[in-house]
Length: 64
Image (tube, rainbow, N blue to C red; front, top):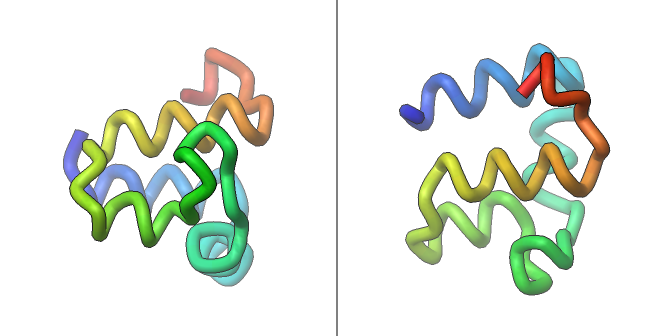
C-alpha cells in the first residue's frame, strides 16, 4: 500500500479533518502505544498501520 492510498482511506473513513486528528492524537495499543503519525515516522509499514487502524476502530472487512 502506498502512503497516498493510506491517507485516502483515512479520509474516506473518517473525513478529512477527523482523519488528521485520529492520526495525530489517537494512541493505539495495536501500534504499541504510538499514534499513526508516530508509527509511520518510526518506520512501520503503511499496510501494518492501516491494519492497526482497522482493528482499533472496528472497520468492517469490506471497507478495509
